[in-house]
Length: 389
Ligand code: PLP
Image (cartoon, rainbow, N blue to C red; front, side):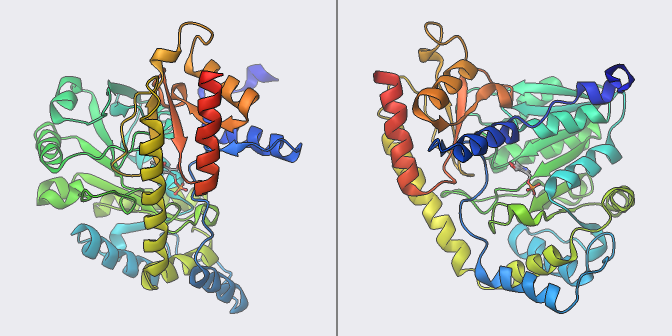
């Protein structure tokens, strides 16, 4: 039967992070005490006031279809959020709410890209962008970044061709934690305007930031605003991965077409999750700030511990909850690749991390600190044992 599959289906790679997570969960089920520093989801519970809003939605019978683009009150709250946090004026009609930012990104690429187009993707990168671009039959064009993984406009300029349709930005980045500086965003905006290119910017980790300030490229001028789709979600900021809730703001025409596609795909995001999202945006910020402080504390621990390992090339993340660590010094002998190194770490020490190959960057691994402090301490101890034993 396999030969009946489309080329599209055959080309599609499964998510490497989810594949590893499934393996870890299976090992844990078998009684193996794996320390999971692989998956990128906050270990915190969704704050109680958000949970309560979801429960209340069910109890009140708020369990029907909503408008495809999302319930109006939520889009109004998001419109306010964009204005207050990002200096962006998106009317509720310019906002699409979907079942996570993943399907929202999918809709954006489907609406903007087709065969013959090129999408500029800075690497290391999250694999879903690449797979989603491939699904449109456009070609991803990589910019290979080296530590400290700072994207500059001149790197983009070198990759622009008459076929370039979209520049993809992800700031702060998964997996490197790097943010794109304001001056570079300004120059990137100029390039996009001059060459008539769309910008898709994924700002999922905007609130998980250590010191710097998050800037939305669409806020840098009227023209770039009209060429940008700003994507965000509730998963990381509010510890709501399982609720599946994401959103985009953008030019009316694009959002309308993305909404039409979503209407044929999933229709609206879960009505219950939308009520949770509304509570998240309008509720107290205390619990969120507490989570962010804890991420900062863990980051400090890891900077201290990981920089003591001379075999590691460590760039402290400016945002997100990931370290993307170079291990080229450890390869070539017993372990020929970061895949082999990570696999041995999992088998011998039961610590799960993700090899750089999953982000198109061999010679590195990603360590997530969306795990409890004690687990991080234990994980680092085991990593040191693995290297030095
Ligand atoms: N964008 C980035 C950069 C991510 O790291 C992730 C999740 O890992 C997502 C989007 C997807 O998030 P969501 O849960 O909203 O689909």
